[in-house]
Amino acid sequence: MNTALKITAFVAGIATVFGASYGVGHATGTGTPPSRTSDSAAHPGHTPAATPSAQSGEHLPGGLQVSDRGWTLGLENPFVTAGAPTELRFRVLGPDGRPVTEYRTQHEKELHLIVAPRDLSTFQHLHPVRAADGTWSTPVALPAAGEYRVIADFAPTGTDEGLTLGADLHAAGDLRPSALPQTGRTVTADGYTVALTGDLTPGRAGRLTLTVSRDGRPVTDLQPYLGAAGHLVALRAGDLAYLHVHPDGEGTTGGPAVSFTTTAPSSGDYRLFLDFKHQDTVHTAAFTLPATTTAPPAPQTTGTAPTAAATPTAGATPTTHDPDHRH
Image 1 (cartoon, rainbow, N blue to C red):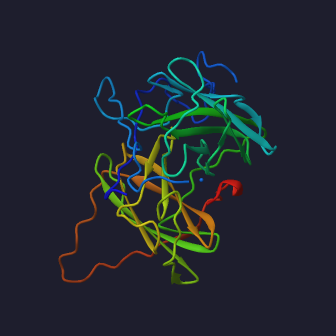
Image 2: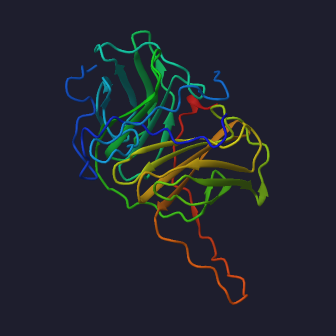
Image 3: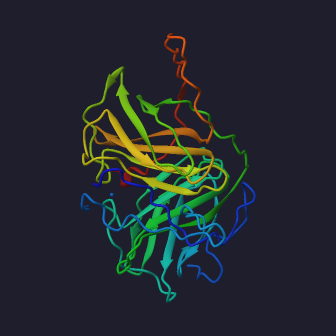
């Protein structure tokens, strides 16, 4: 894996602006028909180029639109019932309108699927199964009613760049949206404690380090997950713009610290979801971290060392993994 791996941010331009937290746009897009293993250490093809904004020239993050450069994400049924068993089925349609049936492997899988509600209270990283006709399917848990975003990260065979497409999934039921969780810098997940250091600064690359411990002892035998010692996904609150980052360095095992190089595209709050594998089980630790341009406080000059503020501890937001797709 290359040192200082960067965010895979890539979108051709926003086709639909999500002005409300709970929009009603159809996940299949206009004109769309209804309808975890070996990867090289360098993860070829997983750094797709973002398309500049027509007005600002800035690169936009992925997952904001259902169609990009002729490729379209089509959900078979974007209307489901919360709390009921749900099988998510979808296809990726190519520029010729036909389902895509050949993909390049990235991070040990042909396609990575993220499912999260608009309030970012939960998170699922799934790996669907593809049928010969190009239809992908996976069970998905939708515990609460609301608007969910389905984000597919993939690279069709024959393309130089990968794509990240997003579509809305509507879960009917008693809607009770939650405020964005405030986690602080330390969370717990399945009995593990994960501490976060580093900051997000808009437009500037920075390093985030996540350190895993259990029962007060550092975890030094993390197992590979998707070809790395950890896997981090960041979603921007408000529109669920998708940032995909991977660890710095060459290692796929070890610990307790795993570092990532990231660049936030804008100010605002971000939800960070760290997947890590230990004792053959995948765990997820979730953080809320703001990206801000505010300068840090000036160091004290009186000769007295500054006192570090106590780090709040909060339970990690419940996250869901499909056990059939763990590694």
